[in-house]
Amino acid sequence: MTPEAALEQAALAGIHCLRIPTPFAVGRVNAYLIEDDPLTLIDVGPNSGKALDELNAQLGQHGHAIEDLELILVTHQHLDHIGLVEIAVEHSGAEVAAIGAAARRLSNFDEEAVAEDEYAVSVMLRNGIPEEVAVALKSVSSSFHGWGSAVNVTRPLEDGETIELGSRRLQALHRPGHSPSDTIFWDEERRLLFAGDHLLSNVSSNPLITLPLDGSKRRVQTLVTYLESLRKTQAMPAEIVFGGHGEPITDHVALIDSRFASTERRKEKIHRLIGERSRTGYELAQAIWGNVAVTQAYLTLSEVIGHTDILVNEGRVSEADDGSVIRFEAIA
Image 1: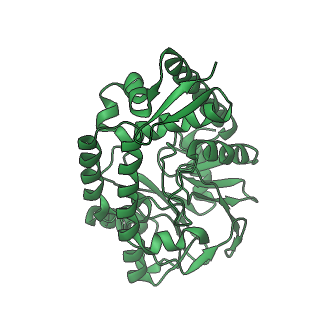
Image 2: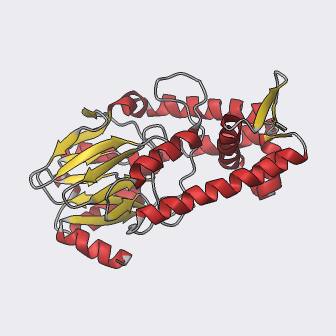
């Protein structure tokens, strides 16, 4: 089935993809309108006038207005997905449902965004990124906060909970990894899966090092967590997966296999680099991506550390911590 055919099949089931503009390199974000009782929207787009105008216009193309929304489902905490939630609620009075563990994080967006930036700086410094680079990236990240907004979750969801609509049931499944709050919504009867950024057709979902939802500052092995989540999703009998960006996915099993293979290749490349000599996470990122490891330091560092976590778990690499910087060393 082609992506176009998948969208046509979805439209017959009352599901419409709304492509909302974002200021980010990933491009437009997908929101999904479900014409049912209640009228439901999955994700909304970033907090901007342009995004709001397009959301209104695209709802209008299907005979609806933002005031008609009755339920908003949130897939995860990233600002390109949540920025317009409260504005939509102000216009419509819609209920907001999200995984319950993320409710505190979503409601305290400004405070949590600052804490995330501070945490990111500490992770960067511990892994060899120069202070001037870390501080500069913190400044850039802070400038993006306005694209997000606090979200008042009026319906906290349990992992596995079913949301009853008039003519369908959606099961909320927690799939952390890309973010700690990643939640997918599963229509078992139609074999349709709304995946947010958990699985994307055109790019791999980077499991960023992020503060846990429990408020602690412990570092979660995000890539390890993400791979566990992907295995659960791969076992699902989905026919179409609707991602948060890009086109629908019509063979998620093969796509996830390709993601696993890519992870394996990168893991082995990083192991070879560590085998040459001990290196910091930043040195590994530079060896792989060159100058991109400066402009996208936290993204590439998260990628590297995710793979070194796997190597440490396999007993092939160790972490040497001198109290200031962590270096990775091969175990003979």
